[in-house]
Image (cartoon, rainbow over the protein chains, first blue to last red):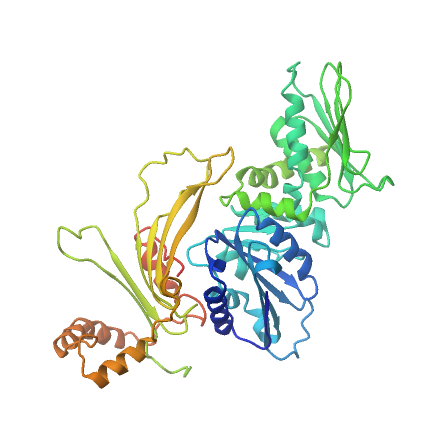
Length: 316
Length: 181
């Protein structure tokens, strides 16, 4: 069910929510968190779709604040709201707020009246994120703040900037996309021979912030020289291309040459083909919402790992 | 709002009851105009468990259990407690158990003033405070008001938020935070 409330106010929206709950029965029960999505006009649907699918795992209230990315300053203050429940909203309820003019500047005031009582708040910027997320109006009320470095104008720089602005609770999808890679690499090192890694090579697309984070993670955990190559190889695959861990008995290679399949080759073992697809927005969001406490490993990687990696490169 | 106005629109107060039974149980009251939401609630926030029995990872913390009596709107009672998230990991997430008055009777209860006006017409006094109660209430609050009047303009807060910064400090002094209603 979709309820349109053109030229509305927040109190009218919350009254409409209570009314829908009364009429529809259990709609508003059992929500575990509020997800605020801050996005621009016209870019809402992709994020809402991902949130709806993630809501099967985490029943939540989704508040989408959509503003003009280039405010002309002449727009009249106006709030168009839309409430989606039931079949149109997965296991969640979606409140879409399209704000124009002055009202768009007060993001905190817009959402305060709609937050679920007591429940934790997660803020997600699927597109351009504020410079210091934890100090932005939405970031201050949120327990977890999710950004996506890959969606910024300079993805690598935004990871480097994160090192100085990181606050516990911040997280980035560039890191979430690495989870499968990290699992495979850790599993490969769990098998004999248990030799120390002497050096590491990471290669990936030049615009992939995940490659940088993977290199930083390996640097932080292994404390060995990490070489990271940025290529614009014409294989059509974006993101991370491959990782090579050098050990005395020979290198472990995890290479993604096809779109969704990676090849793992180790000395003395047949090569394995592993399914290693680029993770969808839904998977990343669902994984991030599973834990609502700060991801301290990510904090260490952006604060310490990235710095160590860059110091290494400069000294070479 | 008139910029010269010195009329308070928000008040937060901590009260204690000086009996053995209620010692160590603070009562925090707050009321204000143009806050985040129009809502009247009584929340009993339970103490945290003294020890972290689940050995959660760093940064993980169990939420505080709470019993919330929603007076208005959406009358009902909510019990909030931690529950294990399904799966192999040990994670605890706060869940709610909800009673909605409106759901149980499929009939809306009359608005607050509807009842009052009916009682006025019937001459039925129990819903109205007696004049002794009103007098006594002012006897407690008058000194506070008189003190505030000497303090100049009260601290400002933005409409649509949950009050001024000093209200948060009141809670922070006791190592607590206001729950979001």
